[in-house]
Amino acid sequence: MDGAAILERLSGRFGAAVVETHAHRGDHTAVVARDALRAVLAWCRDEPALAFDMLMDLTAVDDLKFPGREDGPRFEVVYHLYSVAHNHRLRVKARVDEDDAVVPTATGLWPIADWFEREVWDMFGVRFAGHPDLRRLLMYEEFVGHPLRKDYPIERRQPLIGPQA
Image (cartoon, rainbow, N blue to C red; front, top):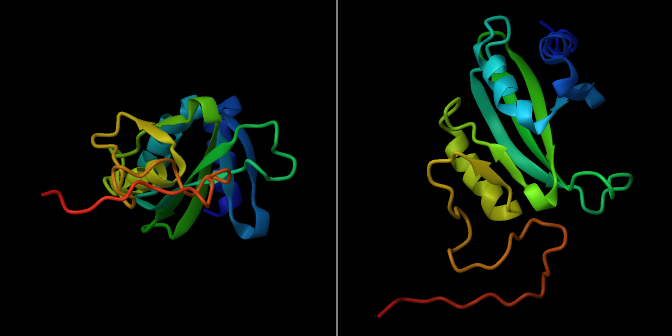
């Protein structure tokens, strides 16, 4: 099944919950409503014709200064899915506002989501509802802020930590 057929099936199954689809530069992408995200991801994994059994990557994008997106949701949470059996790929995105930057966890679908979600939380500050252990992964616990946000002050001094005596 090619990417266009995957997007068509996804749109047919979830209707208005699929906000938009595109295949920019051959990357087939579905932008879905946040409240349907968990159902979309589960269906993509469990539908035999799709069988997206591998979560290749999960990341976020901060669209704070992206032209044309100034008034829209600030963040996009991005899932890259792959089917080993069918050798096809799909990108699924969900847009979230800065004031309510929360999406459901995917750890029950793909265990590797545990580490990916912790990284997104650490770097962007997007929370994953239902995550079993959402804590910093790359930065130390006392670190203030989320360094991949576009408005993170690069001159900010962080608290120094050292060995506890």
